[in-house]
Image 1 (cartoon, rainbow, N blue to C red):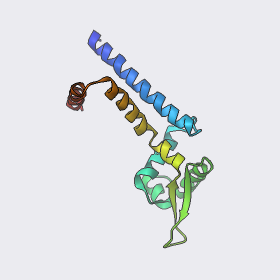
Image 2 (image 1 turned 180 degrees about the vertical axis):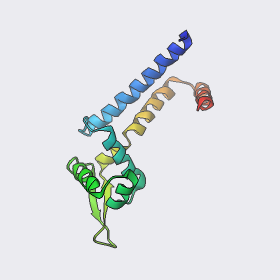
Image 3 (image 1 turned 90 degrees about the vertical axis):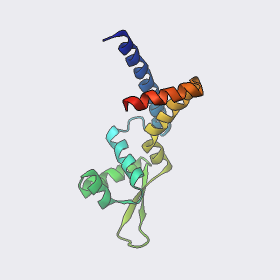
Image 4 (image 1 turned 135 degrees about the vertical axis):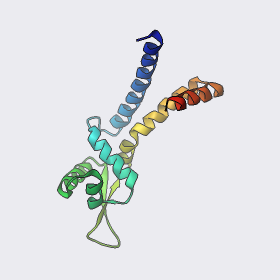
Length: 139
């Protein structure tokens, strides 16, 4: 590996480390430092789809309804979601994120924003534009 590629690798490793530390900090603040990546993925799906029912979540995640029920019950105990009865059909419940669930679902995005803030604080306007141009080139 060339010296420049090794240096680039080191820079990206540091950026990823900063992002990971920010994510861990957010999860730790929520009291859920042991939450799994899969669980975070389900919370993200609930966050992205808004009015999601048990059936809809089962379809989206390709899981059975009993599996979804078990998972949602775990999330309720973790204070990440709550169930809300439909005003139109009392047999239907929506799965809603609590504030804690929303923070967890958005932890990765918020961690990236912290990395960007750190980068923006270290660069002037022209350097930021150059960085954007370079990253878009490889994207």
